[in-house]
Image (cartoon, rainbow, N blue to C red; front, side):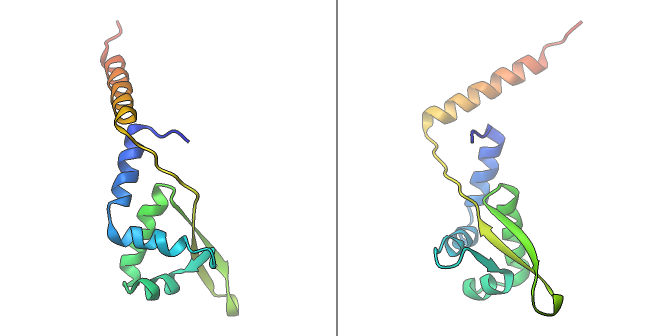
Length: 113
């Protein structure tokens, strides 16, 4: 899926944090396709509030998806799964995106009478 420049910037921002990269690595293990918040927090040794912050950022850019399911005694539990993604970026692609954005801005700034 082709992303525009702003989406690429948001994706790179999301990937620029060590905790988020550790979350991606933990969810990429083949043996477990999904992990609950409590499991991830324990495995990564970070607090649940901090984990939620990073999970939300990764979910916003489409790297993760969270789902809620009913567990024992009808208790809701949220788990996260890693979405398939691949980032291929080079100088030529960045230049192309910047040029396209400049063209759009130029067209948008023209006054029509």
